[in-house]
Amino acid sequence: MRRRELLKSLWATPLLTQSAKGLPPLTIKDVKVIATSAGRNYRWIFIKIITSEPGLYGIGSASNHFQPHAVIAAIEKHLAPWLIGKNPEQIEDLWQSGHLRTYWRNGPVNNNVLSGMDMALWDIKGKRAGMPVYELLGGKVRDAVPCYDHISGASREVIVENVQKSQAKGFRHIRVQMGAYGGGGFIADGKGGKAFDEDVYVETIPPLFEYVRSKVGFTPKLCHDVHSHLSGINAVEFSRRMQPYQMFFVEDVLSPEQLGWYKQIRQIATTPQAVGELFTHPFEFLPLVQDRLIDFVRCRVSAIGGITPAKKLATFCEPYGVRTAFQEGGENDPVNQLAAYHVDISHPAFGIQEENNFPDVAKEVVTGAAEIRNGSLYSNGKPGLGMDVNEALAAKYPIQPAAQGYQYPLDRTMDGTVVKP
Image 1: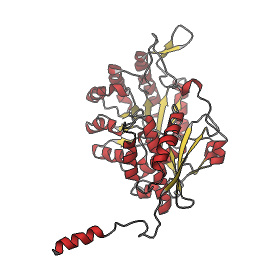
Image 2: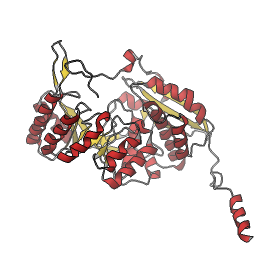
Image 3: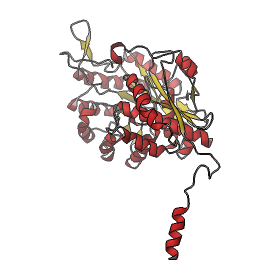
Image 4: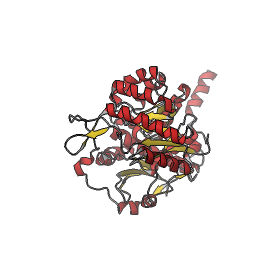
């Protein structure tokens, strides 16, 4: 009898609430979309979640360079009505229920929307706690976040010169490309244009790195992005030929449709593999990580749903010796860059982060952006993510009209076949 009464009293005791901790209950009052070109050709989409506490709101990145209007509609028509009235402190529950809310899970638009929500919720939690988000994730495990630089050139001599300039700026990790993606593999198509030939690419790029190493030595840690341009056995052969140059990694030698070839690559080459720029489903990585077929997970934080899944992915990678190399360059925005920073600086599975320098006008639109000094990324240490969006200035720079539907520029082979990016 006493036991039954004790259990009754325990069930009757209310769970600890914010009110019991001296803070009033918190609810989401409004969800806004901030879309801007930031004074350049960006297509940045931010979510602003406004809470019932005066002045307390969070900002998150939902940017999608090629389908921005789909993301905007998904936020305004679907996410916002669902989110208003909920408790912003329940990040994990909101992420899980938000993930299942659409019934069909994942995909770039759904996960961009989830990401914007997730980052904004972490921003709110950090601001309310008076701490940077990395403190809520366990605190710093390193002093800064090393980044890799991007250099390219039309000739091997120019490339060596640019590698040396990058080293002089303090970068120890440097990505080397021969011009644009696929550079070194283009031939004349007979129509005044160019076509991509993967055999030519496999013959051209390894000798380039042999020359670069002969001039700069093995101190700089070199990377190269194949950008999914190779298929099957050519990806295997390319990885084998790159082995003598002690790459930090080669990125995406295969398209997401050809991941089975990584097993063959591992059998004949020790060239480290970075994979997953096009992944939107965190579970896509699981077999590659579990079988130790790759060395770096290469997704974008806003493409997989935000800080919550990025932290889990890094934790999954840790016991397998796989590291993170979050994709944060190109058209990416400063909010997403900072979200990746908070995961990177607080997790032992961090490997490297892609650098991204933003023009001054963009830094006026997004204030508090991270800074790169001597090859490493630093935040300002402010509570939350540590940044804000100047809405009035952002509105002065609307996203430009959708010329050709914002299509991604594609390469083609000699016979006109599309090359997978």
